[in-house]
Amino acid sequence: MVEAVKLSRHNLFNTHIIPVNFKYFAPKTLNEALELLDKYGKEAKILAGGTDLLVKMKMRLVEPKYIINIKGIRELNFIKDEGNQVRIGALTRWRQLEKSELIKNFFPSLYDAVKVMGGTQIRNMATVGGNLCNASPAADSAPPLMVLNAKLVLASKKGEREIPITQFFKGPGKTVMEPDELLKEITIPKPEEGSGSAFIKVARTSMDLAKISAATALKVEDRKIVMVRIAIGSAAPTPVRTPKTEEALIGQPFRPSIIREKVKLVVNEISPIDDVRSTAFYRKEVSKIIVEDALLISYERASRR
Ligand SMILES: Cc1cc2nc3c(=O)[nH]c(=O)nc-3n(C[C@H](O)[C@H](O)[C@H](O)COP(=O)(O)OP(=O)(O)OC[C@H]3O[C@@H](n4cnc5c(N)ncnc54)[C@H](O)[C@@H]3O)c2cc1C
Image (cartoon, rainbow, N blue to C red; front, side, top):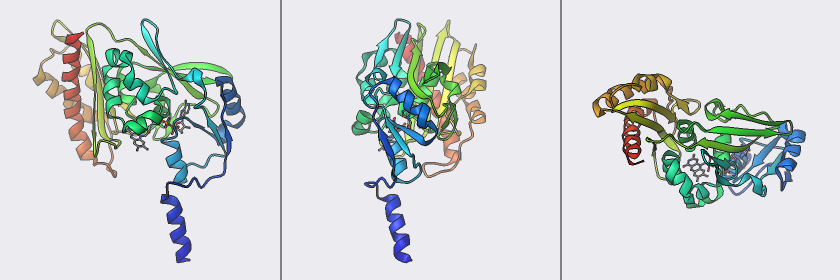
């Protein structure tokens, strides 16, 4: 009996073993993948980089009957400049974002996130689509994409729909995606002239998920704030925008003392918990500081554009 318990604990934590039987598909086109999802969606899992999914399968947190490996679908891997917007295929790896001048020049908050996401090995395998679909409240791509007003294109055999990223997350590990849908691409409008954005993450170590993170986008005209967006990660069941704090900042003069006062409101718009990474108290206290810092960096970047 003691041996049996030992064995099951071993299996749970030995990350070399995938203790699940599944049927494996490796479609080469989006259409093939959508056909498979249409047939097996409820019992299937999409595999992109596998850096979240395989960990969960090894720990038996998910036990899919079917695995649909989309890595070979080239039409889902791209970064395209389309004039007023940039489109990013869901299969684009973090490393590709890191090497992209487009991302660096137009979306500094997303670029900040890329620089602090995992390590090089993870960035080489992990996709931005996987980061969003995994729906962790700590997903590093979510706060920057939220303040950049990104939209997500979801595809199924029935067709496509586009939704703002702010409507995508439903809870930890949960999204609005139907079982027969996959995330096809992310579209980000190029930021307005004179605006800037930034992302700050606080983690236990450089390879860890965020204890708390914040992204901001800001535009100041005639010394007054005319546009501000704030998103916070690891502080609620999903990454969140803080509309009341944004409202309180609009029309205010951009002065560090005013910013410091107004950002105190963010704590009313988050609901952090105590967990292995941090405490609710710490998360609330630090959220104010990183939002303030991110706003100051956004301002500084805006004045350079
Ligand atoms: C050592 C380590 C360090 C990490 N550090 C960080 C970090 O600093 N910050 C961070 O945010 N994350 C981190 N992660 C988590 C993970 O690497 C990221 O979330 C990554 O972007 C997931 O992408 P993936 O392609 O590997 O997803 P996968 O594991 O392949 O998939 C994740 C989930 O999304 C689904 N999925 C994937 N693509 C699609 C799609 N196109 N349409 C529909 N569903 C899809 C899968 O079915 C699965 O449920 C880390 C993980 C590890 C192992």
